[in-house]
Length: 174
Image 1 (cartoon, rainbow, N blue to C red):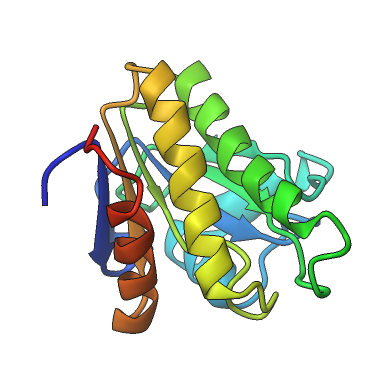
Image 2 (image 1 turned 180 degrees about the horizontal axis):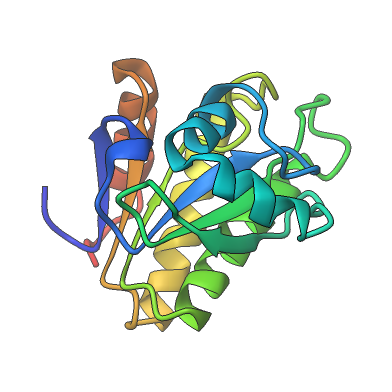
């Protein structure tokens, strides 16, 4: 797999990159799924720093150090809970990805790894979420050469297949 956007199956807490993205909740104080795994792997210092951030609105993002993670930074973004698509969920999910990429650019990150935001306990349909994510990342990277590579790190083969399909439908490789 080449290009500036890649899709892999793996554990996001094990990725050696400039920044990993945490599919956080609005408190930023840890939770289940990816959020809990990142907090456990990073160690208690992550929670201590997150306490000082006063939470984060859905669709926005905040950055912390990576602590015990191989990533230099963690970019936390609370994704939207799927409520049928009538509560601006699509716009909010797109904003999550764009907010994370803007923070990555601001902090000099050349490599960024994302999980599948909002598709777990927040029940965002994977088919829709994958298209939104890949489109936002693709459009951002076309205009921002400072980020060299973005990967979607998928937990399982089913998720990976949706992101691969969404990426393949974008057309030319970056």
